[in-house]
Length: 174
Image (tube, rainbow, N blue to C red; front, side):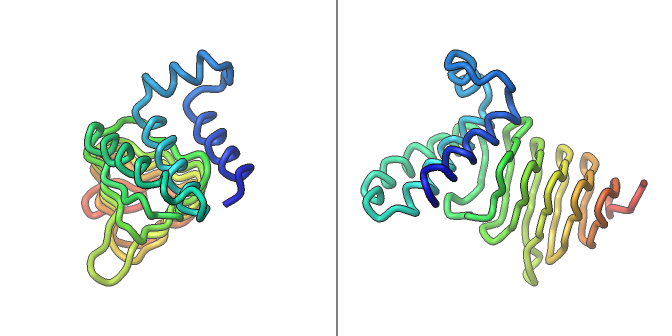
């Protein structure tokens, strides 16, 4: 990852939280939006791990990253390289994502979600997906571009692009 790619990822994540890019607003967003604080440390750790000369600093960053994860209840391993730009954690707490999961660009997640495995594979979340509070996306499935997963839905089958799913087990509403 180049320094410009790193900056672009940070900027795209920030713009999902706040459109004003002034220094004061960046600082305010960092302090008042736990999802952005997590995203900042995650991107910084990924960047440091990609550069051999920064690996000694990555240890300290990893310690702070784990502190932030515990503080906000976000269980996303630090070595997932497959989280796309513009990742938005709308509400923090009880967020669990499997190590091998693939998450596309501009994905929005809410509190209490699980993206995990059933022993056979992990989900692929494509771009512009919104996952509601308490939802579980489990197994070797693909959630299509622009799909919306309702609150407390349990998704175990593929979701087509642009679909709205809800229920337990999830079924297509629209």
